[in-house]
Length: 173
Image (cartoon, rainbow, N blue to C red; front, side):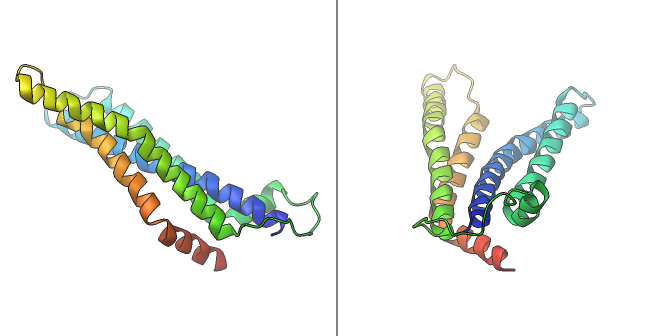
């Protein structure tokens, strides 16, 4: 493994972390879009339109950087001149790039699952408590975001071989 390959892996891992953030922010953007559409029907444009626009802009910018970090790592290395001061000697790492990407995807997915299971359980508890006591207002939407985050984490962990194969296939082209 050469130093350029190591920089490639590090940039791809940053890109995967950004992609995770994009997926999580997309959930908020969709809920804000629903709020904007509801407020447009009642002709009460709150700050929700501006929040939606800012969040949508954030998702677009992060999506662009995630794309560049994942699929255009060679361009970043060339523009930032990351490998100019290093020789072309091989670095002795006993892990392949596929193995490192697999580990990174499993860590990101596991992190999502570990962070969101307590949120999901607490929201589920409040919903069940509201159903039992009948006087507490139930917010069913509060459980959706942790559930979607858990599903994304499970998909990352479960489908990590396909994700790595896709990233390696893109590297070859």
